[in-house]
Amino acid sequence: MARRHGLAPQHRVADAKAATRAMTVLHATEPATPYLSLSARIDSFTRGGPGQCAVQVEVAGQTARDAAHPVRVPARPAAGRGERPFRPGRRQEYGRLVTDLERSRITGDGAGWLAASREAVLARLAGGAELSATQLREDLAELAGQVSWYEHKPYGQVLHIAPRVLTWMGATGDLVRGHNDSHWRITRPLWARMDDWLGAPVGRCEESVGYAELVASYLRTFGPVTERDLVWWFGATKRAMRQALSELSAVQVRLEREQAGWVLPDDVDPEPPAGPWAALLPALDPTTMGWKDRDFYVDPDFYSAIFDWSGNCGTTAWWNGQIVGAYVQDDAGHIELIVPRDPGPAGRAALQAEGERLGDWLDGEKVSTLYKSPLVTWDR
Image (cartoon, rainbow, N blue to C red; front, top):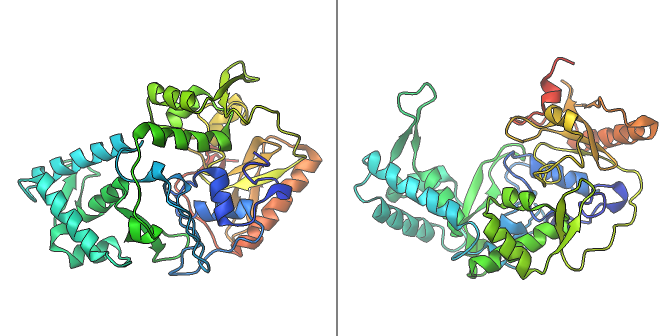
């Protein structure tokens, strides 16, 4: 973690592209998380202002951009259109859309409606245009319509169908979320055509080839990993993961926790010591969320203080590869450490230094998150 994830101060990386490639992906469910994840790994990283996109990371680390200098990474076939590992989710969303379109009486032919709306969106965004879901809905009659969710429930609501169509087109590889039309802590993405964003059409590949490439990247970042880690991380079947491991000639190793793990064939040598290190990571950071089996970096009796019932986490404080606590911001925006697992004098000093570094980077701006480690919500 210290070296490969760029977490130890002496092993931080040079820029957003290097950090993205090091981590395979950055988690972006929370709008601020990619920025905070990069700040933890890059000494010189700066966030963008309104209308700028300090970093935009897409499937499989495919693109990385910063506000001042767009960086184009060659399109990766594993993340392209056609036969690819994300096909099951794409099919499910397509089926739900067709059903909801017809159930809501927007159309009697959901499949035909989606085909027409897809062509209209691609035509409107041709030539490098970037538009929001609202702008596309207002411009294109093909995207008109509303569907009701959870009718007769207290939390039921009526929503425009356009955002779901655009999300589906993102899953097919037609579209990508481009620049952010708001503050770095608020997500208001503009949609762009994937081929325009990358500067070239996205190639196709067989599903097995896509899995093999993505599994190789995951192993490089997170290995050794268990089969359970792989199946959980990819949302895939054991069969698909075992085939990918076989194609990569992955090597099975015995883990300290008496489980079998997997590494790439050129990655069997032990890692040299990294030296003492501390890190403060945001909610849903890829390091914290990188494995299903987490006992080796958080004590089992401390797990429920860091991860919620569904396995998601808030902020975390790390000392030498172990989660020892979390952090919050006070009313003035300063970093407050919550570290019930005492790391000793050296650890306390290092975590305090990281808190000051993060506080300087935030410069008083407060980051809100829906994902909070239970530790920070308990009455302390």
